[in-house]
Image (tube, rainbow, N blue to C red):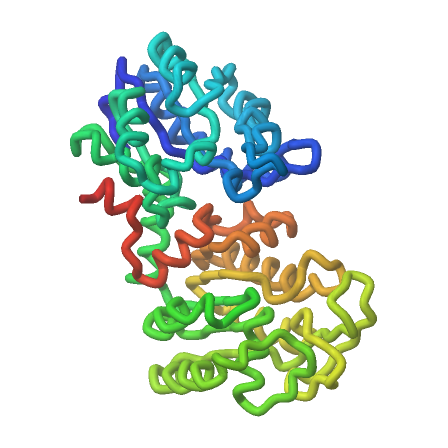
Length: 400
């Protein structure tokens, strides 16, 4: 983070892609809160701040007449929350690089905060357009990228814009610095045992991550829909549970590779199964390898919860990416919330815990234990790609 910002206008790419309810109220302030330390520090140095972010995918969800649904995707919706968190009024530009943005940026006083309209209202954003990025750059003296959640996108506001600033006039904010520090800590120098908990729907989404973790973790606990592909590959009957039949051979290869590396892949011993994918489905507990043909697994069972929890409680380093069940449905949420509780207890005992991935972040927050883990990543897909070892364009633009 730069420390010579007095008297300057600072353009900050933040990730304010927050969830909204039907009345456009912010339902989770996590991403707003994570940006506050960087913004506060810039203001404390005697600078002014120009914030830019995307919100949703407005160009993919146009109105029936083909126009942008401004009322749904405008960043105006976040102003009350942001103003409260920063303890100051927010000036809003009704465009991103148009007359209103330039007029308001030109008269912006030190200590003031200007929020630009949704960057994705402009098709040039996703195209990484140089002219659009150049206009953004003209708004300010300095560029700071603090949007880790979009660091894997080569967009104009995350990557191209950095090319218009000298090395001494661009940097990461505190959020990205922390994301990189803690992720690197897990990958390069974890205290052991290192336990990775992976959930979510598809093995295919996590192949590279599993391969990477086999090289660094001691235990890989696999739950959620992806676990049934492994179970079927090992000869289990999984009924109507989610499965990727084209990944069965790969699942066996991953299990074999882990065994060769003395890494234990742990699958759920038992499963909470349902007769349909619904919150009000009939459900029962069954052995994970003997699920009746007309039933589907929607959560890990009590034996799996106990085994997973015991392994987590002995951990010194923990990565959690993805829920282990359909936690949005109350009857199938026990496994995920039990994992959250175990991670929190292990953290209290001295373990370092990183929660990464949108659904696991939502789960830890819904459990009420978000403040009892070491670090919650805002990255989602970006964190996944970083952990896999991929080069992220938003990071490369600053690092060179």
